[in-house]
Structures are given as C-alpha cells and as structure tokens.
Length: 303
Length: 321
Image (cartoon, rainbow over all chains, first blue to last red):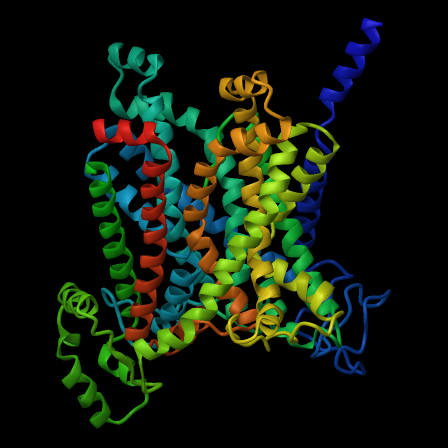
C-alpha cells in the first residue's frame, strides 16, 4: 500500500507541530487582549481596588477570573496590563539591539579590524557577568540620574522613567551578543562565491553588504528576535522582582510576584497566575524562535 | 602552554572590562562618589573622613580605576561605611550561602541531565525521548523566578519540612546536615532545574553523535556490554562539552542565585549585592562584582586546563597551533 503510506506522510508534514500552534495562538491572544485592554469590557482597571472585598477576598471565579489580590485589585486585569508593559519593553529593546548590534556585527564581520576585537571583548565580558546584576545596577543609577540635576548638553534627565531606563539598558546589553552572532554570520557569508562574484563584477562595498549579505542574515536575525524577546521577558521579570523595573502604580508580572509571594498561603492566585503567564509567553517565543532556527537550519543562537 | 597563556590574558582583559563597566555604572547620576560611599544623607564631617581614606574619588574615572585595581590586588578591599563592616568580613559571612546554592544547583542540574540526556539519546525518537525533549524545552523556558514560584506553590506551602518563603537561613552542612538540606534544597532546585533542562538537551544532541561514531561501533563490535558502551565509551566524549557548558552557565547560575536568594532566603552575596546597589555602596558593589567575575573567569580557565588534560589531541593541536 505505498499510495496510502505517502498520503499519510504528506498530511503529517503539512500539519505544523502542536507546540508551535499553541505558542502562536497564545501570543496572538496575549497581544490582542493586552493591546486592546483599555477598550475591552471584561478587563477592569488594573489599579482600582474593588469595594467590599477583604484582603484576598475573592478567589478565581466568575467575577474575578484570576481572583483579587491583597489590595483587592483584579489579578486578571493586572496580568493583562503587566503583559503589555513586559512585551513593549522586550520588543522595543530587541529591535533597538538588532538595529545597533546587527549593524556593528556586519561591519565587524566584513571589515574585521579593531571594531571586531572590541565587540568580542565586550561580548565576552557580558557573558562573564550576570546581566541581571548589571541591569539592576544601571536601572537603579538611571533613577538617581533622573532625580539629580545633572545635565548633558543642557538637557536634563527628567524623562528617564524606569520604563525608559530599562529599555535603554536592555538595548545596550543586547547589542554585544547580537553583534557577535551577526559578525560570525557575516564572516562566513563574505567568503561565499556569490559575494566574490558580485565583487568581481565591480559592485561597491555598500551594495555587497545591503544586497548580498543583509538578505542572508535575515533568517538568523529573525530567530534571534524571538529567542531574544524570550530572554528579555525573563530578565525583565527578574528585574521587576528585584524592584528595578516599572514602579507601582504601573504593573508587571515580576512586580506582581514580588508583591504577592509572601501571602501565597492566603491567596495563591496572586502569585501563580502572573507566573504562568510569564512562563507561557517565554515558552511561546522560544518555540517560535526554535522553529525558525530549525527551518533555516541554524545552530542555537545564544543571547 | 602558549594557548593557556593567551586564554589567561583574555580572561584578565575580561576582568578589567567587567570591573571597569561596573565602576562606571556606579558613577551614573552621581556628582559626588564620596557622598555615596559615606551613605548619602550624612554630615560633611563624615564625607571628609571618607575623602581622607579615598582621596582619589574626585579624579578622572580611569585614574580612580587604577587606584581601585591597585588596592584590590594588594588585598585592600575597603569597607562599607553605611554598614560599618569591612568587605572581607562581609564576604566571609555571605559567600558560603551562595557557594552552596551554586554547588547544589550544579549537582541537581547534572543529576537531571545525565540520565535524561543519555537515555533519550540511546532510545532516540522513542516515547521517553519525546517526553523528555518536551520537558526539557519547557524547563529552559522557565526563568528561575517561575521555577521558584511553582516550587513555592507546589512544594513549600504543602510540606512543613521547608522554611516558609524568604525564611531560609544559612546552615553549614557540617554543623547540621538535615537543616542544611531543608534550607538549601528548594533554592538550589529553583536554579538547578533550568540548568538540568539546558544540559540534558546538550547531552542528548552530543550523545546521538557519539553513538554513531566509529569508536562506539568498534566498542560494540568488541563485545563490550551495551550498558558499558553507553555509559563509558559514548559518554566519555560528551563530558568535555558538559564541562564547557557548566563554565558557560556560571554567570546565568549567579544571576539565578541572586533572584533565588531574594525569593527564598539563605541571604548570600547576591542579596548583599542587591542591597549595596540600593544604597550605591560603591566599594561593596565593586568588590562583589570583582569576586563574581573572578569566579566565572576561573571556572572557564579550569575548563580550559581540564581540556588539555583530558584530551591529548587538543593538547597537541593547541601546543602546535
């Protein structure tokens, strides 16, 4: 029965893996709900206490899907708004990192020289030191900078809210690893025959970089994009837990865990739900990143 | 030897870059480092005292770094003016807890990874492999914070064995092994599970290649028992990559320990570091940063040394090249 065998094999190949479907589905739901949170009727305000409920008065149920926390606020609404901030921070930082790191990496890989050396040393140094420590140190100092009267070129730092600070710090920290990955890719690509062909046809260096090398880096970059967001989401939650991310009244998953963990016996829902949301989101980004990496047959990109 | 000297130079450079970046970061948004060191809102007299001890704090950053490096190398680690505690004392009281968390986390990670990775590779694409592959993928997607919450919810609150959240204390194993286990098991597990996920994936991929290699076929052909082939002949080659990964994960391990120390307790050096960052206690921050970097760099250097010892081919290739 060869016909039957091939047909089932074909059908199997067409079905994407279950994990990927769940991952994309979860992300789509999370992004839509958190993006439209202000307009959706079933999402309450994240900072409004509900009257009449005691501390952890409501468990998960029909009224409060995820229960109400110590200050009688809706955990579901807080998780949704937390998702928004975490996702915005991670995505913005990774795009900034890709832009700067990708450019530097291509320059380093194509021209080698001192910029190459500097990038590898900085990337080595970052690998040798826990990023969460550097990040909390810098975010903490940005807070001091904001309240200080220091001005650079006549411009103060009053705008540098913790959200901004964390985006800046994450972008800076992701530059070196991304640059290193791009550098390695560019290095091997620039030895390829088609680059040589383009060069011998008289193509200028900018043209070779933008038309020959850049398109071939995109697959790696897209995989780095997803795994990078996963890493930054995890890092953001850790920082928020340590108290160096968004500050109350703003909300983020790590902050919710930090606020509610001492009272886990009174109300487990305040801690466990944000934690599950964080896990599912990180997992989804990792699944997609892994899939993209496999699709383009690249080794696991480390960030 | 030349290779090792090169690596050593590279590690020294990494150390300098990290400590310099940390020092520069402590000066962001600060107009008067001496005041930070003295503890912020204190009298002029106290700041003068600090300035007497550290007259270089007004100099350019590079000069300050030179002074600090000189002091650190000669063992003058300074003190915390805020806590009136010398850095040496602080390290002595805080470091053991962190070392034990890290050590047990590595042990737990390896204890998970070795059986899972090896057996999954042995029965590749079987039921066990598929289940553990999914499981390890889930594990690597769990930041230590998530594992900590789940452990807290699923284990700590259900059993009276473990201290409640944030109440774990440092107990040395030689004083009271049972209490040591109670206080350290959950925090180490929170860090170790993720490591186990990473290492079992690594080991599986490595072992699949090893099981296809000629040397394993040869060993099988010689009639060595399958178990011995699997655990001795095939695993031997993978030990190196596991060792490398242990060294590479050192900074992630420390980062996890920082979070977990805040979450569960044994207040170790990571907790002290976070506290120092809150107060911008610059000498303590720099000392701990230097210490952690040395730990990571040293682990990498030891792995390089072991490489040369374990694998004669690498030793030859590297001495020649």
